[in-house]
Image (cartoon, rainbow, N blue to C red; front, top):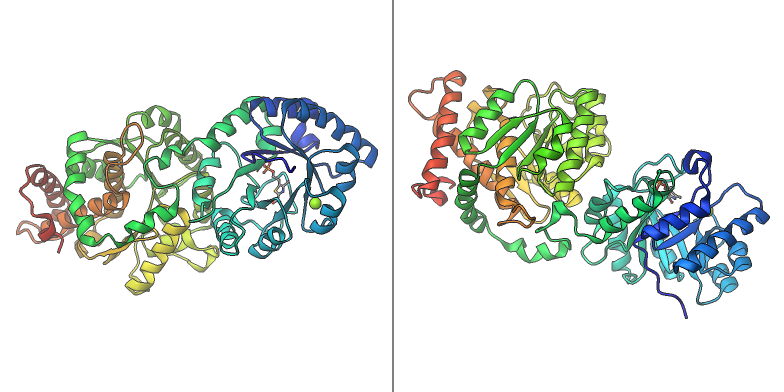
Length: 531
Ligand code: 3NM
Ligand code: MG
């Protein structure tokens, strides 16, 4: 009978000096399996057949003793010679039917796939599982054909399910490690199919303590991701709420504003030099507790205080970027929300590179930016969007086209995306809203976009319970932040004491605070204010 395989932590070996160092492969495999590795693939590209069989036999002793399957990369003959559980074959290797004929019906046969076509063809030909990749660029394998990212993974999983291969097991491979594994599993999950596990090389073989690394990965794969506690893991479960109307969202607004005022959540800003003071004042006006702290060594402690992080790359530096990434990991690990403001994302090569690092660096609950910035974050071809400076430019697209971009990015990242402009567009990938509040004076004052990121962070923090779970709807939280902010601007702009951008700023802070007070006291008719 074919053994049933737990694919959750799939170790692929590598004996090269750069990865294995001077460790003994069998000892590394033993430590890994003790830690929680559930399946081992022996992958060796440079040995003679005799040596391959020798090592494979040693590994099989370990895996048999510890009760996990051993698969051999590429070499059906070696698998036959030692009598292990099966093989893993690449697209350029022996075909599935021949492998099956040689190994018999009970052998485990896995296949590498990097496209929908490859995945469906292999599943149809009887592959027991698919290794899908390359997810992220990795130094472990330099000839990987396609970098597919989490969105590519999801579309392959989706096609498999659609083609009737929902039952074929899947793991992903390429650049997976402890800091990205949970968001990869979360972001790659298609409505009716998710990964069964992750395959890693360097995250286990190249570390000092393979047992601890393996144990950590096993926990991360099995536990729900802290950043998504309270969020539906299965994206299809949001489909039921797709019909939620603007009115339903609006009904949640006063509650979130009150929650911010009552809990005074920490808004940890790693933000640019220009807007620190203004953003801190906006945070105070809405009732949040701001801290402007750019040194990431503090992030783990700050993340425990129940707040949220803003990563605003308005004055990005090499040092700053490393700090953002470390803080992002800390907030992800603590399950606290992160708002990303990709300021000037398309302006320079440095910023485009920073976007890629940050997007690959962790899970971002909200991405907030103007049209150029969101387009850059979305665009595979980042060079198409050449921005001048970091100011918001007049919109080139109509609201429908902008909504499409926003929805696409939110669906891809499984988060909420907010595109600011004369009409703001916000989406969680399923539900998309346009908000036309606000005032042109906001465009004449620096930092109004950045301080909106701060505001959103406070609202998300107030919604997320300390032990995970969400009070209300994350999209509603973002809409609430947006409305509080934009309506304060409208009210400030029409005041008789406001004559221009200079007098607008203090009036705007006053109105932010006034809306907070009136909402807490129940004196503001929210549905009317937002019409
Ligand atoms: N196959 P690491 S990527 C062996 O894309 C292998 O098919 C890949 O190594 C594929 O976990 C890869 O160190 C190497 O990034 C993965
Ligand atoms: Mg191969």
